[in-house]
Length: 307
Image 1: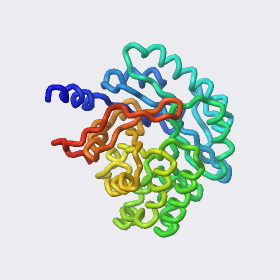
Image 2: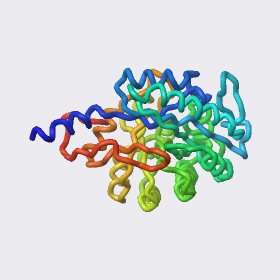
Image 3: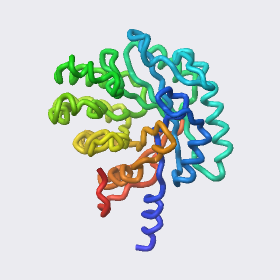
Image 4: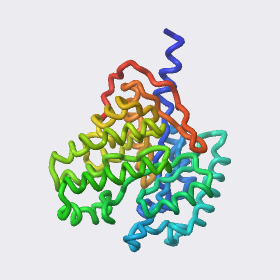
């Protein structure tokens, strides 16, 4: 019994946040990578993976096409800004290599078919540790932004949203660009207000083959805790979708706060980690696109009940 105790204590305290937006993301606070690493160290996080946005919409060109570089907004498709991003991450790696946290270079890409050439170029030219794929926009409207989604939701039926969203999600998986899917039921964030409780079941009958494809390709699924900050009662994805993923054979899971400010870093990471442990699943990290379990999953049930 004593041999088990160190492993359990280590599991409780080995926490990693694999979805963090530094100041390069224009919707994030203008904080640099070092400030986040200091915050992560003070909060007891063992690993931090920066996942700055790469968004570009070739059809709706006026939207989602910029990043913040040294206080200026520059076009995201001119990838030279990633040189500075990687330089700053490397500086942090050197500074924190003895004290922690371990620092990883990631990216969150808002997938669209028109973006594939740009995605290919970015992933070919830069040594990312971790690549998150997400569906942030449907028909050019950001379903994750409260300023954009109301008008779109009013004009879009639930069935149309279902087909468009999950069609894009399926294409993202089959593109084979991504290590992991971010918040696969992001439409819940603001959709409930417009569609009511029916949106909570929108995934049924359409997400199952997508999850099978995720499992078949060895991709992962993110447990994203940002939903709780926005008043939802469950993480992204919901417990039902998480159970479907486990049932279909998905084995790789990451945990991320989707922090856009220092205050949000590490938010509910412990609770999300416990949720995966309760389901007998490992939490994974990534180095150069290769997954590894942070610590072996524990099968026994915790007394704390995560969302």
